[in-house]
Image 1 (cartoon, rainbow, N blue to C red):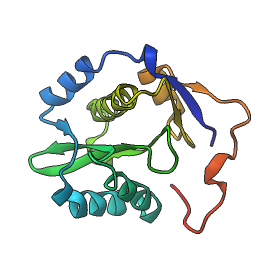
Image 2: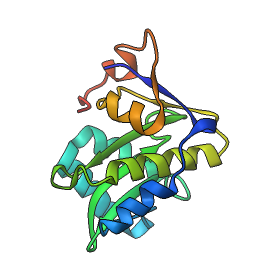
Image 3: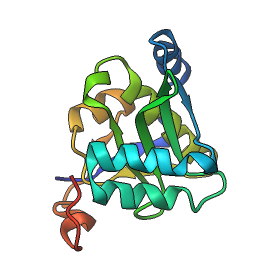
Length: 159
C-alpha cells in the first residue's frame, strides 16, 4: 500500500461530517484516560495487535492523540495521529457493522483538524487502505515512491 498526503490548510469543514454522525446517534470525542483499556480492546478485537499497539501510543499524549466514535456507550470507531511517526494520521477504523453512516469521515476529519490545530500544514496517511475514501473525504493524494513505506518491517503485521 502507498502513503497519501493531505493538505491540512485546505481540509474540508468538519461540522457537516460530525453533524451527520450525531444524527446517526454517534458522538465523536477524545477518549478519557480511564477509557484506555476499553478503546484498546475494541481496536485489538476489530483490527488486531498491530493497530492496538499503535493506538496505545495515543494515550501517551496529553490529551490523547486519538478520537473515538461512541454509540450507546459503546466504541464503534477510532482514529489516531502521531502514533507510528510524527505527522502520520492513523490507524483508524470503524466497526464493520457501523460503516457507511459517515462515522469514518467524521473521525478522519476531526483527527486531521486536530493535527492542523497543533500546527501541521500537511498530514501523511501511512499505508492508506481505502485510498478512494481518503481522496474523497480529505482531498488526499498518493505520494509517489511511497510503497512499501514504513510498514514493510517489524514483528507484527499491520492490517
